[in-house]
Image 1 (cartoon, rainbow, N blue to C red):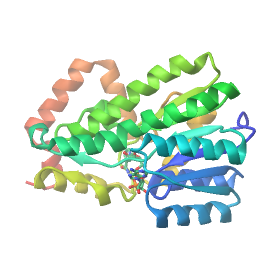
Image 2 (cartoon, protein in one colour):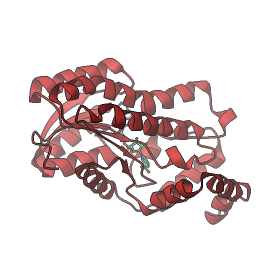
Image 3 (tube, rainbow, N blue to C red):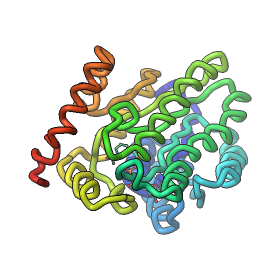
Image 4 (cartoon, protein in one colour):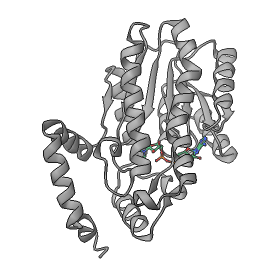
Length: 276
Ligand SMILES: NC(=O)c1ccc[n+]([C@@H]2O[C@H](COP(=O)([O-])OP(=O)(O)OC[C@H]3O[C@@H](n4cnc5c(N)ncnc54)[C@H](O)[C@@H]3O)[C@@H](O)[C@H]2O)c1
């Protein structure tokens, strides 16, 4: 991380889970953190934690679905710290359900929070990064962006969109010496289930069961992300299960789809969790 001399980061959804863990791990290394979050109590708490950990917090009340909030955040960071080294578009929510049962309003909701937020975050900070000729953007997707698990199309599509956007930016911004990484974690323990949207009871049970099963902590994921950034790696897969599925899909995408269709048809995941 030595190439980031200014040690200035902006993190959305920094009030909980992965965003909070990233803020604190960076603060311990002396970073300044723009704590962008919709929940005022969480903003306050993370800002306190950042200051206590040895960093410097700038609390930024922010709804990531509003482009003007992200533009104001970029202006505030420029005014306070004169620039930015790391932009982490992390805020997100989760959703599941059969394609035809997901209401149009929920598609809108999840698109706005998960995907448009990343677009707005990149739009707001890229001019600053280009002026500097340095910096790094980290977009938090999910392994579901390439796993394409059934009955979670609304979530999968937003995360696949983040992967595609990030790949485009990696190529587009290389000539400006701006790094881009995309993070594709599998399940880890956070407050993500608090805002879970489920179109059906069965999917809700399954997603909650998968979430319950994990004992991976957000700071483990945060450390992997920082290692990936330090190495200027593009695809960051912090967990072994995501890496395994990634390799199978890369090896033979057709075989992967057949395998997953078989698992789904036989309800093997539900059987494993004794949900049937
Ligand atoms: N936890 C997992 O298993 C998992 C797996 C893969 C990917 N992810 C991704 O990691 C990211 C972080 O999620 P987490 O697991 O830490 O969840 P979390 O719920 O603990 O944290 C998300 C934070 O985002 C904030 N937020 C929600 N809507 C917002 C908005 N409109 N504006 C600003 N902030 C908003 C929430 O208040 C919360 O503090 C998400 O993008 C999620 O999709 C999580």
